[in-house]
Image (cartoon, rainbow, N blue to C red; front, side, top):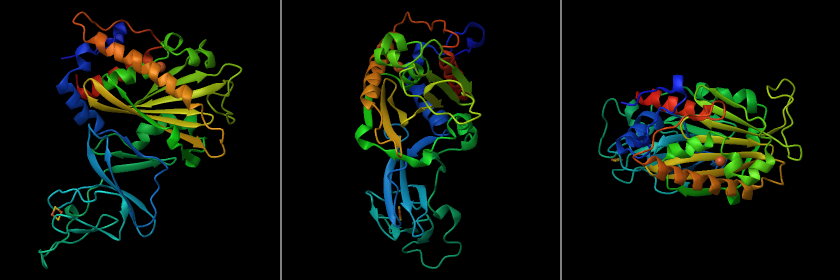
Length: 358
Ligand code: FES
Ligand SMILES: [Fe+2]
């Protein structure tokens, strides 16, 4: 039993064992990742009519086989890429077709997921029934980003709403993917250590020399709301900043970036040039993959200085891997957190404790 003593002492409620425990790693998958929203795909690839595309949601952790289709009317759908008969994978590679035909026993589905026929069944009453159609996760779209939730859980509106007052004015529907500036990183550390490091700015002056030059660290606002944490990076005078509309809650501030984290594993970093979306993908209790998707707003032809994002990422990985080695020490005990600067870490730990019932 892990006790949450954080409210009185501002100590983390998580012990060192959390970062290497196989059972907890599995419980986090079942009780947190499956019932929370996961990023499924961005503005690209956008499918054309009669195209299908299989992919795996969180390969190596959730390993959920998904099928993205676009019907004859141009409407996109997301299904489990799993036959409703005896469960074989339906589509192996992207392509074009009018129907989906199961390679095992020939059950046929429309691109809207309707089961149409089953060889050998003949004329039987009640076929197809609701359970014969393709099963689908809950899906939601926001500004060209599509999300999926595999098991019942929080509504999309509740999950995303803290972001809207800050970034609702941005032209998110114009985001353009920059594949040449999107990368995958491998980190030898537990996924939660990577998230914790993201959630505090206290390390910036020590770990990120370039960022230290860009940000005005005389203030570093942190807001915790619902299942999100917002960190606000203020720009030094010589740095670009957002043009804020009238009535914006940050009116009067020079905003370098809004750094949003959404429980459990999504980071949305909004800059004047576009969005850096970071996905934290657990692989094992001590291994994590980080996917960076870079999008620019249409018309921002100059694009981001992503070499700076890359350098910052390597600096973060180095320190997170060092923490992974440290927290396995038998003598490690969670230390006192620094109020304001580490409120995001505390919020993350409290959400973990609440959702795991620890
Ligand atoms: S598993 Fe698909 S038709 Fe049998
Ligand atoms: Fe960092």
